[in-house]
Amino acid sequence: MALQELAFLPASRGTLQYLRRKLELVKRGKDVLQMRRDQLAKEVLAIMDELRKRPEAEKQFIEAARYAAIMRMARGEHEFRSMSSLVKPPKLTHIIVSYQGIPVPQIRITEEPDWTRLADPDYRRVIENLWNAVKTMIDVANKEVAVEKISDQLLYINRVVNSLEKNVIPQLESALRRVEEKVVDEELEDFVRVKILGGK
Amino acid sequence: MENYIAVRAHGLKSRLLTRNDYEQIVNGDKDVGAFKDYSLIGEKDTLEEKLEKIYRVYVSRITLLAKASQEYSPFIYALLDRLEIENLKIQLRHILGYARPVIYYPYGRHIGPAKISTLKTESSIWEALRERDLLTTDVPKFTTGLVAEREAFLDFQYYSYLMKQLDAVRIDKEEKSELKEAIKSEASLHLAYWTRVLKPQTVENLAKYSGLDAKPAEITLKEESTTDLLKTIHETIMRKIITRIETRHFTTLPFVYAYNFYAKLEAQNLEKILLGKIIGLPGEIIIRNLIFLE
Image (cartoon, rainbow over all chains, first blue to last red; front, side, top):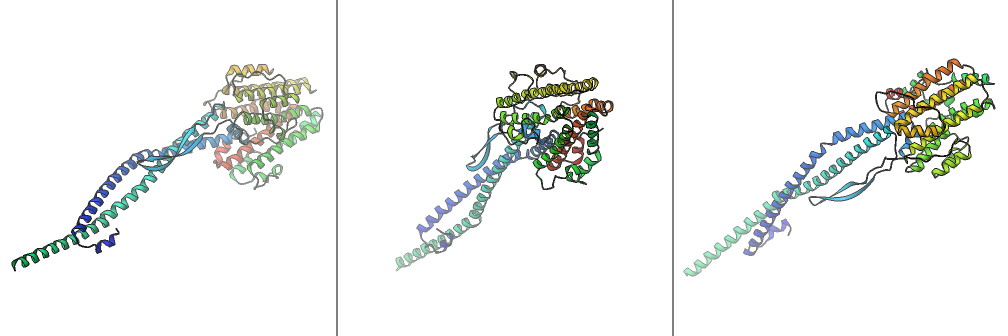
C-alpha cells in the first residue's frame, strides 16, 4: 500500500489493527536495518585500518619501480628485455567474495611468478622487490574495492533507515492516530446513541 | 697496411662523442640525430629503431676497418662477432625462458638475427655455432640447469675464438702478446662477473673447458651489486687495458682493438641515454651510469 493511500483508509477497528501491525513491522525493520548498518560500519572501520598500509605500499612500489628503471637503463634494453623473458609471470584470477553478505570482486594470486631461472643477483633482487610491492598493492586494492562496495551498501541502508524514520513511520503514526481518533469518536457516538435510545 | 688501419681508427676515434656531447643529449640541448654519424635517427623513431640505428653505426665503423685490409679482417670482424654472441645469449634466454619479445643487435656475419630468431631449441643453437666454427670445443654437460651457465660458456667460447683469430693474424710478436694479454685480462674481468652469478668452481671449470687460461680478476666493491661490478669491469678495461694499448701501440693493430672498445662503449652509452630519457630518469642518474672516454 502506498503511503498516499493512508489518507483514504476507512476508519474501522480492522484498519486500526492493520495499521498497528504495519507500524510494528516497519519499526522492527528499521531496527534490523540499523543493526545491519552498525555491523557494516564496524566492518568498514576494520578494513580501513588495513588501508593505512596504502602509503607504505605505494612508497614500496615506487621505490621498487625506480630501482628496476635504473637497472634497466644501466644494463641496456637488449639485456633487460631478454632477462625478463626468464621470469614466469604470475597468474591472477578474479573472484567474488562475500563481505557481510555483500558481493565484492577480488583479485586472487593463483600462481606466484617464478624467477628461479634468473641467476644474476641484481635481477633477482629487482624482480623480488617489484613482486612484493605488487602483491601489497593487490592486497590494498582488494580492500579498497571492499570498502567501496560496503560503503555503497551502507549508504543505501542509511537512506532506507532515514526514509523509514522521517517519512514512513511518522505517516503511519499519523494515520494510526487519525483512524484511532475516528474509531474512538465513532465508538463514543455509538455509546451515546445507545444510552439515549436506552433512556427513552 | 697495419699502420693504415690504425690511422683510420684514429680518424674514426676523433669522431666519437665527448662527455660534453653526452651531457648535451641528456640535458635535451641536442638530439642524438643532430650528430652527423647518427643523423638517420629521427625523433619519431621508436626506441627499437633508434637502438638499431645506433648499433648499425658501431657495426659500420668496425666493418669499415675490417674491409680496409683482408689480412687483418678476420680478427677485426671477430671483435664485432661479440654482438653475434650477445644475440645468441638473447635467443637462449628467449627459448629457455618464457618466450617474451626480445630485440637483437643488428649484426650477423655468421648467424644473422633473422636466422637466430628461427632457432627454437638449445641444440639448434649449438649446432649452428658448430657449423660456423664459432665453437672451439664440444658443448659440455651443463650441471646447473641455469641459462647463465650456458651464457658463461658462450662468453668463454668467444674469448677462445678471438684468441684463435688473433693467432692466425701475422703481426709483430710484441703486438700479438700485448693483444693476447689484453684479451686475457678482459676475459678474467668478465670471469669475475660470472663468479658472482654462478658458483666459482662451475665458472672455473667452464673457462678451463673452453681452453681459456684466465683466473677471475679480484674486484672489491662496497656493495654486492652485479650492475656496479659490470660498470667497474668496463672502467677497469678502459683504465688498465685500453689506455696501455693506446699509449704503447699508437699506430698498429692493437689500436683497432682499443677503438672497438671505444666505439662499442659509445653505442652502449647512447643506449643508456635514450632508455633513461624514455623511462624518465633524472639526468644525473643517467650521467652517473655512463662511462666516458679518458
